[in-house]
Length: 75
Image (cartoon, rainbow, N blue to C red; front, side, top):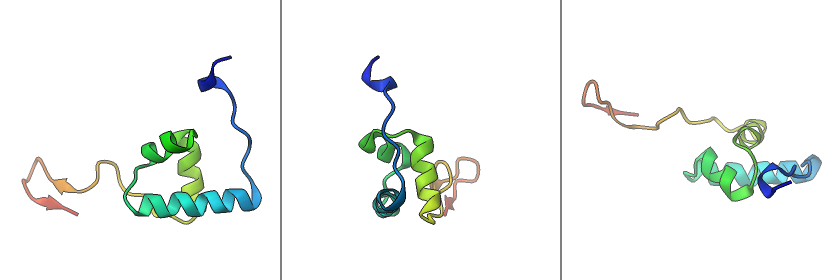
């Protein structure tokens, strides 16, 4: 079995709460779910679930920037 397909141990209880707090801090500081996933070795879905459990309001896809259609700044 290769490393990519090996299961990671379950995270629960206080450990999961602590991980949620850390991921929340980093996400709110600007890191993406994909970046957090890569840094922790966990799946995108796992990281997203832990963030939701931590009460994070997830950002929309693509973020802000200039609207291609209207040429205006989107918040």
